Length: 359
Image 1 (cartoon, rainbow, N blue to C red):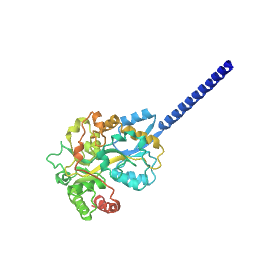
Image 2: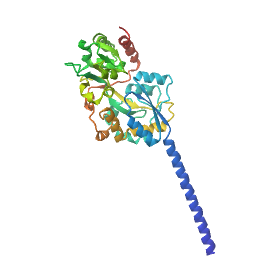
Image 3: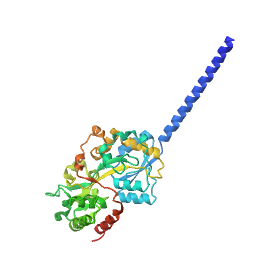
Image 4: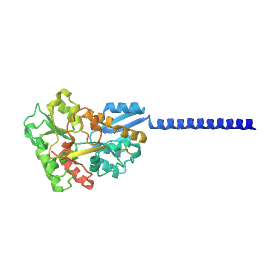
């Protein structure tokens, strides 16, 4: 009886071990399948020009065994029009705050799965305080907060005002450009006059329009949101309204000392670009992985270093930075985020047409 009992126990133990082994194999397969779902595939990004470090993209592709395809846009209006026309196919888009708000209201976005992005803990509370349109990051995750300023070629230009009034300087006529961006140009004029960049007061907007049309526009070669940096680098333009990263990207570092990049003390429009996942995205899980990857402190510092940005969004990245930014976070203090102006957008568009297309 004892011998039979021992054999039965041994058989039961063998069966138990086989069951455990089978379960472990199944778990392993499950983990492999889960990992394979999180990695691989192609991620389609739609971002601003001069805004995505190649080194960061390469590291993401290697770590996640994925391919990243980048398309670029020069203005929020261009991006929005393309998405509304059905030109999506993108997994992550990088709109500024006013268009993030619009896209939320238009129900064009998928919600953010916060649990999939633990690095959200590094997002600056100050940035979320400013992001009144989405303070809990339910639909968007901040990418960078900055502002367009003025780049001056100090070899060619001397004795100039360091504010928006430089565009009224007739000595520089034919050597200047401003962005082909309604909210940026009109926002600069409003700020220069002492008004909010989000003003919806008709009298203030008309005053700003007169300033642009009568004092600034006669001195401009054109409104240009795409080629201003190349034209500045070539010497065609001596003064441009634009983004620091674009201007310095086109110049050899040996010439950087020739540039005075100004964020005017009267302020102007400030942007908070975010990462959003549009409806129709095919790689939602990989998109969350990318957003989380970007906000690793050392990776985000690499992004900041590449474009000499200040750490305006991230609480820990500055400790990993190795370069001096082109401007400091405190320089943004007088600047104001552009908000969705709702029904008053039609008034802005009408006035902008008079600036852009009426001689």
